[in-house]
Image (cartoon, rainbow, N blue to C red; front, side):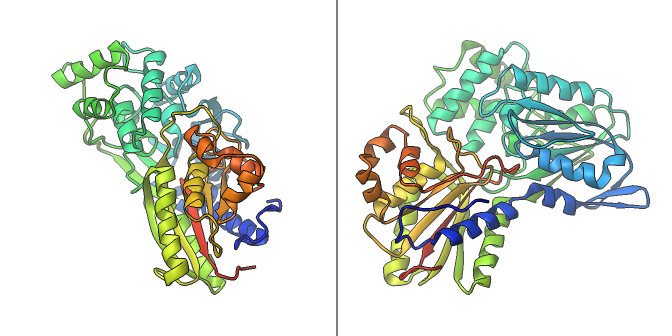
Length: 447
């Protein structure tokens, strides 16, 4: 990674320390490494965790598809019958055996349907006893889509847009998505097991709590949610009357029992979470302790409005700075999936809103800084992964003629960090283990 020069010269995060911390976060998020560790080839047999198999199909879905599929090609390429990897358009990297299909994120398009149909077509070749290894990472919900019969892509897209803008949690969004789709909520695994095949899924979790049923809308995981739950989400978020009539009609049919529910149990299907946000937090914590600094993991389940979480984390940072509770000096780590309720039309993401809530609350306070980064390398509608904030952030923004409160109201917080030189750019990382936020409490600074 290149060197970052931060304009906030008295920030307690020295530039080289930020670079080292970012590198540790990215290394700990490396999905190639995680899949490689899960696979062994011995005497012509492939051992995937505790499963011994011979030849298999590969389906990779999500932002981490290339990294995960490359690992399986490199370790066990001779054993792959055929495979597909569905990735966001522009994802770097190449595969030699598994075919790469570019699709769209965060909203599904015709590319998503093409990818979904290609997967269903490949799965139609499965014979009794065949194995399919699914490599699943976040972003898969939009990348792969085949709407339920009677629904158009526009219907599904409209519901997605409404949910994303409503402030709904990822669990709520996926509850609805699963019931409008032929590829989500265990339905892809059902395609395999109905043909007598077996499914092994290696999952990189991008959801708080690491529930495999929620990652990429759980294409291979039994779905505990129902058509009734979907309707409840839409009603609770105040968008039931705004969703297309065909969607309401389909969900009501599901409630009446005239449509099959998503599978509630699946035989010959094994789902393994092999990477999560907590893994990253633990690795960063270990690194920081190796430098002789204290380190405390607060949570890997950050959930709720990003700017409010920023304010809450600021309250913890201020207690640490002035009372030495919960730490006197060191790093407070947290991760998860905050949400942004979009009411404006600006540029930014969860990290910049989180950092702005934090910066407003610690204005003019020295000795504390925050770094927040999306492990996939692209946050919100920015071309950046995250940002850094401290007690000078707001004052520095004002010097550039920026009114942070106005920009926050307009969801235009990226400008604060772009102008003050505290934006973090990594490009696509090939991973997707949510946001990692590190608060450094260091009166007097650190090098």
